[in-house]
Image (tube, rainbow, N blue to C red; front, side):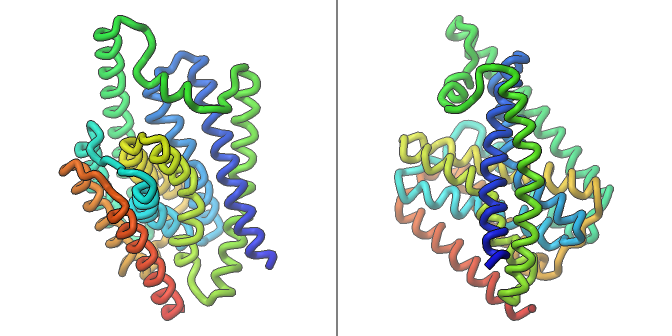
Length: 329
């Protein structure tokens, strides 16, 4: 019973700490005059991926490579099938957002690079250098695009308010005082490793109790848990008829998961890639990436039927993972 409480409690702490860290980081960046669009592309993206980063990094340090890799691969699969599928059950979710196709192509390319690297396990400093270089390229291009768009908006409207300000102004709970924002950041930075510790300890114990590997738990339970912030955001967006933001969140999150989380983790400690992930999960992740590219390229609008198919596909994937993992164990 303690293992299940540790796993559930750790995930709750991760979600809360990640949210607090994002709010504090946004507030500090705004006080420093960083453009809102750049905040969204960098600080907020990093903050929402912080739970996955801490989980993978601490798991690698504790010689639990299956959790470190499985967390990222499972999150990327859940981001496509669940984070896009569940909002589609609520309202039509358009996938034709401007720039989605271009960024989807990059996401598929990054996924391919990651898969190739996985076959040269363990992932070490060379993998870290490649992934972090691609991350720097992505962030630099995103910042350039965002700033160009910001200048165009100012030129058209004649206003000094940037195009992304409305979105950030709608975020509740962002502190006004700089010292409160710093406290938020400190609490988030303390809470994340604490939550990660309990999550990993609980996940390992649950895996042993169920007779499956650490990677199976990471691919499913931990992956869904660390994807809850993205899922909650897209569900609320769909409920408010702003479903177009969903695909942008998924693309950015998946790119960041592969490049930043695996890149930073492998820069600190080498990671062995479990054989079971090489047989099934990385290919499912690649299929989801290609599917996302198709949705963006053809500007598909996901309806309830598509939502049922997506969620059903994820349930089938989870079933296959547990059947395979139990058999392997």
